[in-house]
Length: 105
Image 1 (cartoon, rainbow, N blue to C red):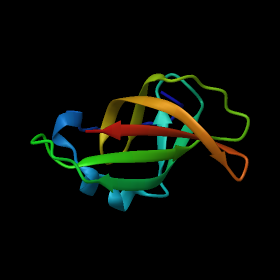
Image 2: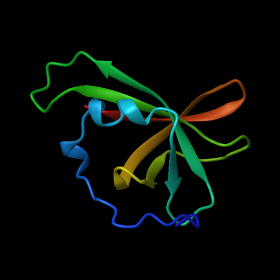
Image 3: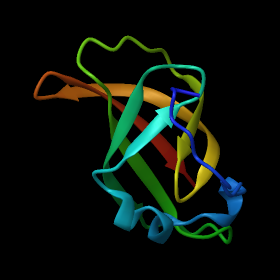
Image 4: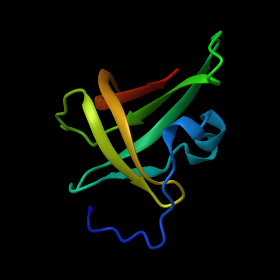
């Protein structure tokens, strides 16, 4: 797990998480399980949605330079949230840094 030890991690169901769980984590790193890579949370964006399931939102992550990745499920680990399986899609790079986005609706 990226050589990083996260003792006593919590495990959250993504259906129970909202944008407020990520607001204070902007600028922090999410390690990728079984990889030396980590993505940095760059933004949390809220969307208007008539969905009764809760607040629709997206997370944007910056990847290390020259990271190549396809859309798919990534197992990310954060010391405050534990391990989260998120479907990430590559989006346009910012300042040469690859970006990935997860959308929750």
